[in-house]
Image (cartoon, rainbow, N blue to C red):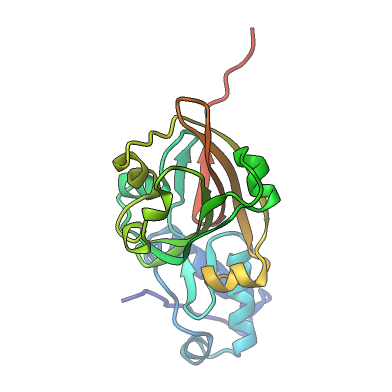
Length: 247
């Protein structure tokens, strides 16, 4: 049972929404509101606490702005869980989630062969119009959507990879099973606001912060095999790297 005991004092000089946000923050800090827990809807909370719905909404928004709560479209407001901390290495997000003790799940939105566009052909160093396997997936963990992933593959036998395979394991594991060994990659990490479509897929509020990653992966021969563009919920995901000082 989620502990949402909040007591407001109308006669206090402290605004009611601030009283709510302070008490919710304390509940999160003390562990009475567990990481990953969902709050009841605003109407229920307003009735329970004896305040107006706009007051509840503003109190919750205070913690959303501080990164302690996140609103998920169609699901509700959730206490932010520990982030997936991913080191800068060539690995599968699926494997990283397993290693972190999360339960990864994949929803395949698209898995089909198409002619390479100019951008894809340039990054993979192939001819425009050459066949590539185009993938679009939503990666979740413990029932929460974390990332929207687009990938294009120019590898022998890529068309044999089925959506059913991608729902059961990571892309790089499927490549290894076919004798294809990811060796090195060039990555660019960025950040931006979620588009309306991305927010709907990841069940976030429009404009929520996303961490982005663009990757071109090579095998040991130096051939470019994969172009990936991934967008991650920034409240759930971070990148960890070690920086070495100069002489």
